[in-house]
Length: 571
Image 1 (cartoon, rainbow, N blue to C red):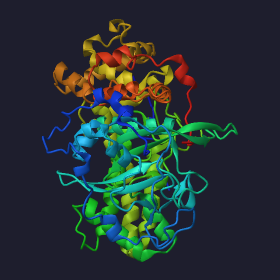
Image 2: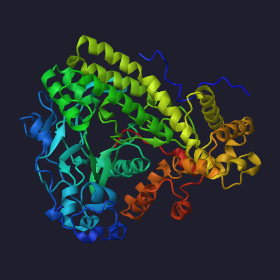
Image 3: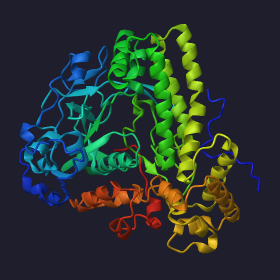
């Protein structure tokens, strides 16, 4: 069998790519059964009394960068600073804690999850109780390919930095906590539907092994927030919510772009040096080549992040430069989606009319964004360094292809072989082509290929339980592809148990499908918080078979009604 196919997604990159005061603890008592006191895997000391907990004594960002002198909170043009002082605006009406991440509380914030039942904790995650001076970050960005000028934290306020017992530093942000100088035409609020999605997906991505920001808590309210969900003139009143989210840094490509665009070169140098010093420990801060080494590292890590996205069908939805982290972690969860039926043109965001950020184009967008980072760094580079930066960027294509091939071979239980690259590319390309032709489920096809013994993968050995395989097995190439796969697998001399173990630990059985998120949203909007905590627990073990998840249909064919679901940038 000889198929001359371009490997979809792998070879898609062209070589010419130029709370409120009246909050009562009774409101959160239903959460008590989801609080897990045994989530601190490192057996570190955790605080059981929130009043004894504190942020870092040294707030590095405030000490290291100029803060805007204007402290009044109104939308404006900001310059010659990295942050503005902004106080969060707490929610007022019927404020309730809907969910917390036990792991984030205990293993990142050194808090016993029991503190979530206290009014002090709720006041903190709602922006009422401040432990230091809060800030919002000024940045710019290219949105859908065009420079948008000043953007910034339009609905996020950083309420402090925390150093945990493991020596890790995290920046804590409240998303949805009201107006900031960067809110543009918005109100700085977030609604329940977008907040549920960000809370769950932040945690789901972590457990899938993908670099990501984290979510500690979700607070909901009856505060009215008016939104036009699909920008079609049908405005409606929704309910406000706040997510406490964390990241080692919220600096992004747009953080540097705005300084270069404004010709604030000294501040550009200071910010870039700060990022290198604190987050890129392997780079010598005194080296004349440090900016080049920094760029090279970001290129490689961004390629790695996008390959990981592709491996689970994750499509970010809004891959603007202001949403791309300098640390190459996934941030700013908006109209994302996990692809169900394999479709290279999958676009989760209804606002993306041209499909700029579809699944297949994410690697290309990574290249585009890295080129904008290169341009932002140019004032810090010598003439020779600028030439080298261009060469480094050109290397992104090969880095991406290599990482993609290795990971997708692993999804098939196979090991990368430098002498077998062309045949391995064909093996993956043909599988993806069959999945595309038959509209097979991306997640469950890979998963079920690993759940069955290899000698049972012929179409006659597949029972109805393996619904995704049943579907792809109807393709005219399937039988011959299985023969190719068997031959390639046997060549490695792995035992069948080894092949299956690799695949079951690489291919999740449960992902945050759009319909699952929607079912949670509908429950939370009715003040039923059982389902969100139930789903969170399932997503914490995506590679393990779970009876509860099976009974909820999380590994079954998606319901027909789910095909009508839409998400947009409106949040």
